[in-house]
Length: 338
Ligand code: SF4
Image 1 (cartoon, rainbow, N blue to C red):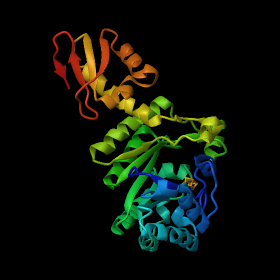
Image 2 (cartoon, helix red, strand yellow):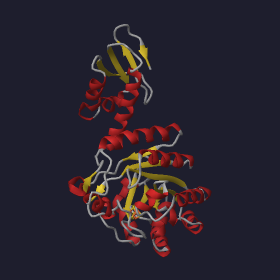
Image 3 (cartoon, rainbow, N blue to C red):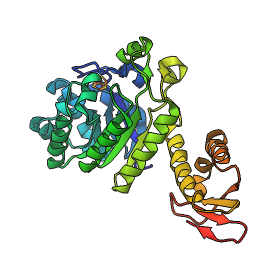
Image 4 (cartoon, protein in one colour):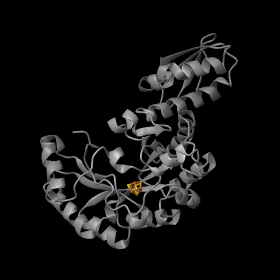
């Protein structure tokens, strides 16, 4: 089975001491799960042979903020599967202010390998306006404790939160990168129905990022993180039926948001390469698996490049390139610029 296969268990709003403005966890998760040992055993048993070697993932809420006894029940129910080798690992998501030395000891005891922390912003004013109820210092402390306990840390950040700007979101990414997490997930804020953010939006007090703004910023964040060796594991909310059928009221929700960002990264690179050449007939060579991102959804990149460089005749083709490399093949004299 693929190495990253997971058996997900959504813990919904359990353990959340706050109401973050953007969150209607029940809608995002698409289900509310009861919290008992059966939750774990049913999920694992239902996965059957297909789940062998998978990671068990407690997602959706603030796992370490639920009562310690319940954490022990859930983790204890997973332990036999971990010991037998059926499960390869356990991961969970939580809030930065719900991580203490005691928490780390408990997670270690039950073999939790990875914790995803919802840091969301490293700007305290943005955190406050977003109802997060924790500070950037809480994130830094939680990362330190988890790391010292030998637990891998994935940090989640959001863009376009109330009070944020492109500069503050870039600042958040830099501070997150300086913590050297094992990976990051980037979620542009989406206005979800039945959330305080939706109330603010409908009252005209919050304007979400446009799709274009979010993709442009996330392209910069992707480059910032990967340049420092930090994998970007996801960009954009996981699409769900509930979100796609009206739950996402406004903002940059797109089922293939990550692809939009990758198209944007390639577009930005091409623009700077084309600006360096006077050539009129140019073929853009990219790695085979980047062809569709280079063309863009509904040929968006090609159309935009046509507007930006109306004097050029551009073609796109697969070439012998590195992952994000673009080579310009100048058709007049067959020179190649990379
Ligand atoms: S974002 Fe996380 S901490 Fe905030 S309300 Fe939702 S589940 Fe709870």
